[in-house]
Amino acid sequence: MSSLIYRPATPDTWDDLVELFGPSGAYSNCWCTWWILPSRAWEAAKPEERRDILHELTAEGREPGILAYDGPAPVGWVSVGPRTRYARMMSPRAWVNGPLDFDNPGWVVNCFFVPREHRGDGIAAGLLRAAVEFAFDRRATYLVGHPIDAEESKPGAATLFPGTLSMFLAAGFTEVERRGTRPVVRLDRPTHSRS
Image (cartoon, rainbow, N blue to C red; front, side):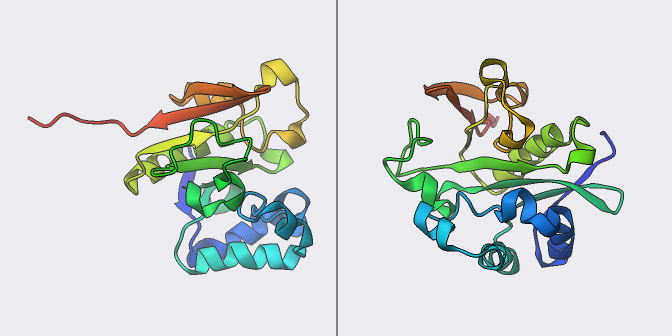
Protein backbone atom coordinates (compact mmCIF):
# COMPACT_ATOMS: atom_id res chain seq x y z
CA MET A 1 0.00 0.00 0.00
CA SER A 2 1.90 3.02 -1.27
CA SER A 3 -0.51 5.51 0.30
CA LEU A 4 0.41 4.62 3.89
CA ILE A 5 1.83 7.19 6.25
CA TYR A 6 3.84 6.40 9.37
CA ARG A 7 3.81 8.09 12.76
CA PRO A 8 5.70 7.27 15.94
CA ALA A 9 3.78 6.31 19.06
CA THR A 10 3.43 9.57 20.97
CA PRO A 11 0.84 11.02 23.34
CA ASP A 12 -0.95 12.36 20.23
CA THR A 13 -1.24 8.89 18.66
CA TRP A 14 -1.95 6.87 21.82
CA ASP A 15 -5.71 6.66 21.19
CA ASP A 16 -5.00 5.35 17.68
CA LEU A 17 -2.76 2.66 19.12
CA VAL A 18 -5.47 1.60 21.56
CA GLU A 19 -7.97 1.50 18.69
CA LEU A 20 -5.62 -0.61 16.56
CA PHE A 21 -4.85 -3.11 19.31
CA GLY A 22 -8.55 -3.48 20.07
CA PRO A 23 -10.13 -5.33 22.99
CA SER A 24 -7.50 -8.09 22.83
CA GLY A 25 -4.58 -5.69 23.33
CA ALA A 26 -2.94 -6.85 20.06
CA TYR A 27 -2.00 -10.52 20.61
CA SER A 28 -3.61 -12.11 23.70
CA ASN A 29 -3.45 -8.87 25.70
CA CYS A 30 0.31 -8.64 25.30
CA TRP A 31 0.20 -4.86 24.68
CA CYS A 32 3.59 -5.33 23.04
CA THR A 33 5.31 -5.86 26.40
CA TRP A 34 6.37 -9.50 26.02
CA TRP A 35 9.97 -8.50 25.24
CA ILE A 36 9.99 -5.60 27.72
CA LEU A 37 9.25 -7.65 30.84
CA PRO A 38 11.21 -10.61 32.18
CA SER A 39 9.31 -13.88 31.84
CA ARG A 40 7.93 -14.12 35.38
CA ALA A 41 6.96 -10.46 35.50
CA TRP A 42 5.11 -10.76 32.19
CA GLU A 43 3.20 -13.81 33.37
CA ALA A 44 2.24 -12.06 36.61
CA ALA A 45 1.13 -8.81 34.96
CA LYS A 46 -2.55 -8.24 34.30
CA PRO A 47 -3.57 -6.96 30.85
CA GLU A 48 -4.23 -3.48 32.20
CA GLU A 49 -0.75 -3.42 33.78
CA ARG A 50 0.81 -4.33 30.44
CA ARG A 51 -1.22 -1.60 28.78
CA ASP A 52 -0.02 0.88 31.41
CA ILE A 53 3.63 0.00 30.64
CA LEU A 54 3.16 0.77 26.95
CA HIS A 55 1.20 3.91 27.80
CA GLU A 56 3.96 5.13 30.12
CA LEU A 57 6.62 4.66 27.43
CA THR A 58 4.44 6.61 25.02
CA ALA A 59 3.56 9.37 27.50
CA GLU A 60 7.23 9.84 28.38
CA GLY A 61 8.06 10.50 24.72
CA ARG A 62 10.13 7.32 24.34
CA GLU A 63 8.34 6.43 21.07
CA PRO A 64 8.12 2.64 21.54
CA GLY A 65 7.06 1.97 17.98
CA ILE A 66 5.47 3.19 14.78
CA LEU A 67 1.88 3.20 13.55
CA ALA A 68 0.91 2.86 9.89
CA TYR A 69 -2.14 4.78 8.69
CA ASP A 70 -4.32 4.38 5.64
CA GLY A 71 -5.91 7.81 5.63
CA PRO A 72 -7.03 8.53 9.21
CA ALA A 73 -7.29 4.84 10.17
CA PRO A 74 -4.43 3.02 11.94
CA VAL A 75 -3.76 -0.26 10.11
CA GLY A 76 -0.49 -1.57 11.55
CA TRP A 77 2.17 -1.36 14.24
CA VAL A 78 5.84 -2.20 14.65
CA SER A 79 7.80 -2.15 17.90
CA VAL A 80 11.30 -0.69 17.48
CA GLY A 81 13.73 0.75 19.99
CA PRO A 82 17.06 0.44 21.79
CA ARG A 83 17.69 -3.16 22.73
CA THR A 84 18.31 -2.08 26.33
CA ARG A 85 14.54 -1.39 26.58
CA TYR A 86 13.81 -5.12 26.30
CA ALA A 87 14.79 -6.98 29.46
CA ARG A 88 14.06 -10.34 27.89
CA MET A 89 16.63 -9.64 25.18
CA MET A 90 19.42 -8.36 27.41
CA SER A 91 20.07 -11.51 29.43
CA PRO A 92 23.28 -13.28 28.36
CA ARG A 93 21.20 -16.48 28.29
CA ALA A 94 18.53 -15.09 25.99
CA TRP A 95 18.21 -17.32 22.93
CA VAL A 96 17.73 -14.27 20.71
CA ASN A 97 21.02 -12.64 21.59
CA GLY A 98 23.13 -14.01 18.80
CA PRO A 99 26.44 -12.16 18.48
CA LEU A 100 25.45 -9.36 20.86
CA ASP A 101 27.90 -6.61 21.76
CA PHE A 102 26.83 -5.60 25.26
CA ASP A 103 28.84 -2.37 24.98
CA ASN A 104 26.76 -1.39 21.94
CA PRO A 105 23.60 -3.52 21.91
CA GLY A 106 22.06 -1.51 19.08
CA TRP A 107 18.37 -1.30 18.31
CA VAL A 108 15.85 -4.04 17.61
CA VAL A 109 12.73 -4.51 15.51
CA ASN A 110 10.85 -7.19 17.36
CA CYS A 111 7.09 -7.20 16.85
CA PHE A 112 4.53 -6.42 14.16
CA PHE A 113 0.76 -6.22 14.53
CA VAL A 114 -1.52 -5.97 11.52
CA PRO A 115 -5.23 -6.78 12.02
CA ARG A 116 -6.48 -9.75 10.03
CA GLU A 117 -8.50 -7.63 7.61
CA HIS A 118 -5.36 -5.75 6.50
CA ARG A 119 -2.93 -8.66 6.19
CA GLY A 120 -1.44 -9.43 2.80
CA ASP A 121 -1.35 -5.77 1.76
CA GLY A 122 2.37 -5.18 2.38
CA ILE A 123 1.77 -3.19 5.56
CA ALA A 124 4.38 -5.08 7.61
CA ALA A 125 7.03 -4.56 4.93
CA GLY A 126 6.26 -0.83 4.88
CA LEU A 127 6.47 -0.70 8.66
CA LEU A 128 9.86 -2.40 8.58
CA ARG A 129 11.20 0.21 6.15
CA ALA A 130 9.77 2.95 8.39
CA ALA A 131 11.39 1.36 11.46
CA VAL A 132 14.80 1.33 9.77
CA GLU A 133 14.53 5.02 8.87
CA PHE A 134 13.21 5.85 12.35
CA ALA A 135 16.08 4.07 14.13
CA PHE A 136 18.84 5.51 11.96
CA ASP A 137 17.36 9.01 12.26
CA ARG A 138 17.76 8.55 16.01
CA ARG A 139 21.40 7.55 15.62
CA ALA A 140 21.10 3.79 16.04
CA THR A 141 24.34 2.22 14.80
CA TYR A 142 22.66 -1.03 13.82
CA LEU A 143 19.36 -2.86 13.94
CA VAL A 144 18.66 -6.53 14.62
CA GLY A 145 15.62 -8.70 14.12
CA HIS A 146 14.65 -12.27 14.99
CA PRO A 147 12.19 -13.18 12.26
CA ILE A 148 10.56 -16.46 11.37
CA ASP A 149 11.88 -18.41 8.40
CA ALA A 150 8.46 -19.10 6.92
CA GLU A 151 9.96 -21.23 4.14
CA GLU A 152 11.47 -23.64 6.64
CA SER A 153 9.02 -23.76 9.54
CA LYS A 154 5.65 -23.18 7.78
CA PRO A 155 4.21 -21.24 10.73
CA GLY A 156 0.61 -20.19 11.28
CA ALA A 157 -0.28 -16.51 10.91
CA ALA A 158 -0.45 -16.03 14.70
CA THR A 159 3.25 -16.84 15.11
CA LEU A 160 4.50 -14.34 12.52
CA PHE A 161 4.57 -11.35 14.89
CA PRO A 162 8.42 -11.09 14.69
CA GLY A 163 8.15 -10.73 10.90
CA THR A 164 9.41 -13.08 8.21
CA LEU A 165 12.99 -13.65 7.13
CA SER A 166 12.16 -12.86 3.49
CA MET A 167 10.74 -9.47 4.51
CA PHE A 168 13.89 -8.55 6.46
CA LEU A 169 16.20 -9.71 3.68
CA ALA A 170 14.23 -7.64 1.15
CA ALA A 171 14.76 -4.60 3.42
CA GLY A 172 18.55 -5.05 3.31
CA PHE A 173 19.15 -7.07 6.48
CA THR A 174 21.70 -9.89 6.45
CA GLU A 175 21.34 -13.17 8.29
CA VAL A 176 24.25 -13.39 10.75
CA GLU A 177 23.37 -16.48 12.78
CA ARG A 178 20.80 -19.21 13.36
CA ARG A 179 19.43 -20.24 16.73
CA GLY A 180 17.80 -23.54 15.88
CA THR A 181 15.45 -22.61 13.07
CA ARG A 182 15.36 -18.92 14.05
CA PRO A 183 17.52 -16.50 12.10
CA VAL A 184 19.24 -13.50 13.64
CA VAL A 185 19.41 -10.65 11.11
CA ARG A 186 21.28 -7.36 11.22
CA LEU A 187 21.43 -4.09 9.31
CA ASP A 188 24.22 -1.59 9.96
CA ARG A 189 23.75 2.13 9.64
CA PRO A 190 25.09 3.28 6.28
CA THR A 191 28.32 5.23 6.39
CA HIS A 192 28.60 8.11 3.97
CA SER A 193 31.97 9.44 2.91
CA ARG A 194 32.47 13.17 3.14
CA SER A 195 34.48 15.03 0.55
